[in-house]
Figure 1 (cartoon, helix red, strand yellow):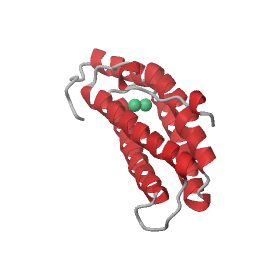
Figure 2 (cartoon, helix red, strand yellow):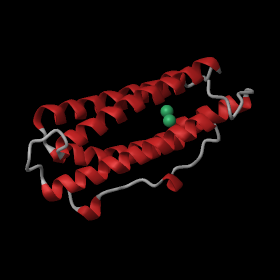
Figure 3 (cartoon, rainbow, N blue to C red):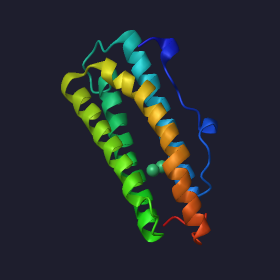
Length: 158
Ligand SMILES: [Fe+2]
Ligand SMILES: [Fe+2]
């Protein structure tokens, strides 16, 4: 993937949904993906020449697992919010989570098995930024608005 075609999301580019716990999670996630993106770019430029536990491959794997777990918790919290507030589009929103999570798990597994950087790079710099941006702008935004309109406290942590 060409350096110029890489998409890197910035926190300012993602709209706030005005529920603190959701916004914080989104910002954390953007930072995690940025760090992963830096590691991936470094790996693409320099490779992984030695085999000690602190190699680029091990660092990428470690960050991926942390991100995966963060995403699982992220989606679980939003699903819980939708159930608590009886959000009508719960099935659609939670299904988007499930599809994205499965895709992410496949990519992590593929990396762990093959250590091929290109599919991971495509995911981090193309699929994920597009997906995340669209998802926050639609599903998350609607969910948060609905929750706020139905009396959910914007500062509540669930
Ligand atoms: Fe979200
Ligand atoms: Fe969501």
